[in-house]
Length: 155
Image 1 (spheres, rainbow, N blue to C red):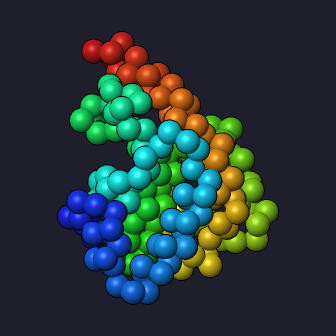
Image 2 (cartoon, one colour):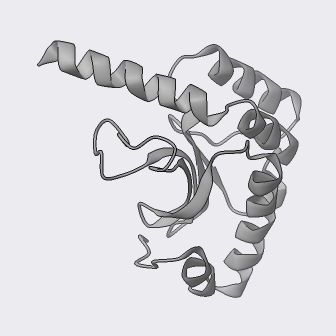
């Protein structure tokens, strides 16, 4: 379910009460651990946390109109999801995240960067908070620049 909400409040208001409660719990963890410089808004039909154009005007290398996404939190048809772009791919941080999550005793239902959940209690919120706190906007900008350079070399 991709939301057409234009604001975070609109997004939250459009959720069923049970989903809203769970999203609110995860959102509080994100906001508590989010490094300075990121902004919250709606991105890709979900609540997004991103490097704003005011900090990095060039934007996301695949779509410069979009800011560089860091985290997305959303409600899908059969589950809720938190997209952690900082753990996308085979990186030391991704390995740390998966090992720390396993050590928490919680079951990790994860795609490449998305962690699916039915309720916030399913999540290792402390591990999610720690991984969020580890990546400042400058790191996401550097990753974006690397991708931009790889893209220009291919062309």
